[in-house]
Length: 613
Image (cartoon, rainbow, N blue to C red; front, side, top):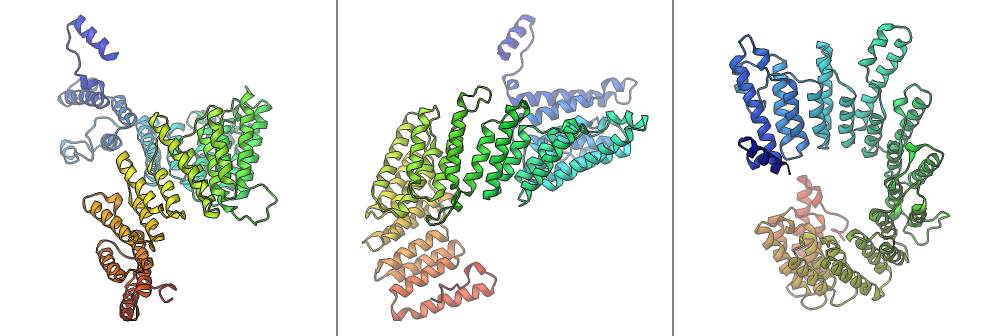
C-alpha cells in the first residue's frame, strides 16, 4: 500500500519514486544510512565555518539508525549497531581527528555526535534480544561504563534510567546470571532507601527525586526470571524470599512500584517446578491455588492464565520418571495422576467467564508426557484416552501429542510382550500420516525413531526389516536421516544376529553411514555406538569369519573416530565368543592397547571390569 501511495504521489508531483528495494528492511536501512552519510559530508565541509552547528549531525539521527538496526532483527545488525555506537563513544572521547577515524574503519564507524542514554539503551536492548552469558556480561560491563561516564561528567544526557537497568537485568536474566542481576537490584534498593531517608530532612534530597531510579515490578520480575533460569539449587527459596520482599515493600507503601503481579508469581512457580523435586511440584500447585484465591477476592493483578497452569503441570512432569517402581508404597498420588487431576480442574474453569482459562495443546502434551514418563502399568491406556479427548474439546493433538503416546506404548511393551501394542502403535502412525496428508500435522524424525525402536526391541522376527522400511520411508519423505536412525536399524539387526544375514545387514548399514559421511553428510557420521553395535551383531552371529570382519571394522573405527572402552570391549567380546583358543593373542593385544591409552591420558578408552571378565 505504501508503495502504491508513493507512486501516485510521485506521478502527481512529477518526482522520481524510490527504488523498490527501499521497501525492504535492508533497503530502508541503507537509505537511512545514505541520508546520514550525506548529512555528515555536509558537516565536514562546513565544520570550520560560522554555521557549523546548523550542519552538525544530531544524536537523534544516530539513535534512529541504531534503533532501526536493532529492531530489524536481521543477521549482523547488532554488530553493525555496535560499530556506530563505538564511533559515537570515540567522538565523546575527542578522538575524532581524520587520522584516527580512518585507522578504525570496520571496528568503529566515524560519527559526529556523542551517545546519550537512548544510545546506550538501544545497544543494551540489542544484547538482551540475543540471550547468552557473553551478551549478559557485555550488558553488565556497558552499564558500568555508562555509570562511570555519568559519574565523571555529571552529564544528565547519559544518566542511566529505569529503562537502562530494566534492559540490563533482562539480559542477565536471559543468561541465567542470577547473582549479577540480584546485585544490581540490591544496589538500586540501597540508593532508593538512602534517598527515602534523606528526603525526610533535606530539600536537596527531594530535588533528587528526578534522578533516583525506583526499583519497579519489571526489575524485580527480571531477577525472579534469572533465578528461574539459573542452575542454583536454592533458586526457588531465593525467588520466594524476593517475592515476599516485593509484597512487603508494596503493602507498607515503602515502594508501591514493587507490587508483585501474576508474572512475579508465575516465575516463582517456575522456579519450584524446575527444582525436580516433589516438594517443588507441591509448592508450585499451592502457589497456583493462592493466585486463584487472590484473584477471586478482587486482586486483578493476580489473574492466572494458562501459562501459569502449564508451569505447575511441568513441575509434575519433571518428576514423573522418579516414581516408576510398581511396588513402591506411596501414600500420595503419582505425579501423572496429580497432573491429570489438575488438567480436569483446568477444564472445569472453562465455564468461569471471570477466569477465562482454556487449555491449549501444550497443556495436554505436558500431561501426556507425565504418563509417558511414569513407566506405570496402564499408562499407555491413560495417554490414549487423553489423546482421544483432545479433538472433542477443540484442541486437536499435534505430533508431540502422538509421540508421547507412542513413548507410553514403548514403555508398556518393555513390560508386556502383547503384540497388540505394536499394532496400536502402527494404527497411530497411520493416523498421523493421514493427518499429514490433510495438512494438519507434521511428522519429524523423532516419530520415525520411536516406531523404529518399537520394531527393533520387539520379539518380531521381521523387526529389523520393519525398521529398515521406515528408514527408507524417511528418505523418500524427505525427513532428515541421522546416525541415530541408522543405529536403531543396526541395533535391530544385532538383536536378531542369530538369524542368517542380519550381521551382514548391520555391516551394510555401517557402510552406508561411512559413505554418506564421506560425501559430506555429517549427520550420518558413525560414532562409537554405531561401530560397537555392528561388532555386537558379529559377536552374536557365530559366523566363522566374525573376528576377521570385526577386526576390519575396528581398523575403520580407529581411522574415523576415537574408540572408547565400550567399543574395545565389544571387540574383545567378539574375539572371546568366536575366536577360539588361537585368538588369545588378539585379545591380549587389545588389552595392552587400552592400558597404553589410559597411560597416555585417554581415560575414555581405559580397561573396565568388563574388559577383564
